[in-house]
Length: 197
View (cartoon, rainbow, N blue to C red):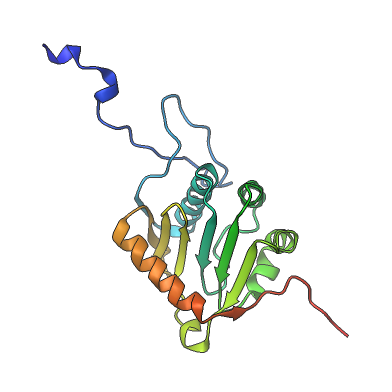
């Protein structure tokens, strides 16, 4: 048997990635033969971070992830208020039996910088839990995303927005343990309705 007779199905696996426009963060159409699943990859800069988050949300939606866990000091650098983000998040949320858990030192930046997301949060309050950690954790909150399909996005250098996205088991486990430790000591924050006199 010659090497020419080897079935194409047993060839090396194709690299699976999603592409996003760096300016609009809208997903670019997949090219023929490309699968739609994220690859483990490092990122740098605000555009790279936003693209990693879009890729993670797209995969969470496609894989029907039941739970998303987000952590950041204030979510100011996240693309939460962009129309494409809110649309994709809405499609994920409508999948049934979903939960989004957010941990932040404060949510004022979301109301100011991401009003579209703030409105979405009011509409989907039944699946969103917003927590504020106890004071000991509030000063050093990590920037991370974890979901129930074992995907993690983590920023290691806040100043240059350097981090890693993917499915690395060790990093995923560390991120999950760190998130759980912070969230377990959190109290409710970011009320859906502000009452006044």
